[in-house]
Image (cartoon, rainbow, N blue to C red; front, side, top):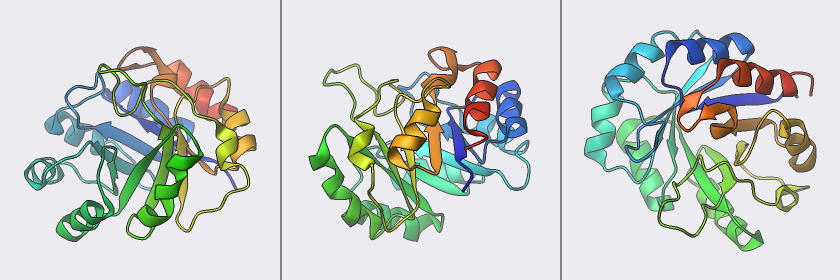
Length: 214
C-alpha cells in the first residue's frame, strides 16, 4: 500500500503547492497560538480554497472549547479535526457530535505504557496519530518538537482504526520509520522546515520523494 503523507503546519500558498503537487494526501493547519505554525482562520480559509479534490484538509487543535472550534470551523472547511491536547474519549465524542467532522486523536508516546490509551481512544476517534511525548519542560509544545519516540514500540502492532506516525520525521529517516513501524501514513511538520514555523518547499518535496516508492 502506498504511504500517505500529511504536511502539517502550512501557512503559505507556495508551501501548500509544494505539498499537493508533490503528492501529499493531507494538508494540515494549526490553530494553537503558542505554536510558530499557528495560522489565522481567515488565512487558512484562503489556503483551503487552493486544495485540490482528493487532498484532505486537517485542522489541528489543542484542548479547544466549542466556541473556538465553531469560530474556526465556520470559516475553514475540514475533512478531519486533529485533537492534539489532553482530550478524553468523552471529549472526542462531544466534538464529533457537535461538528459532524471525523476526528483524529494524537497519542503521545514516551514508552510502552503510553500505548495503553490507544484502544480506548480508538473506540470513539476515527483515526489515531502516534506522536512523541513532548520533553518535560515548560517550553515544549504539544507537537512539532522534532523528536522521535522508539518506533519499535509499534512494530508488529495493529490497531482497530487507521493511524498515522508522527514525531521527528524528516526526509532522511522517513523510509526507515515506515519499515520499522509498518506505518502507511506519516505526518511531518518541523522535519520539512528551514526554521521554526517556516516550511521549505524543497524539503517538502524531498520528504514526499523519500517515501514515494515504498
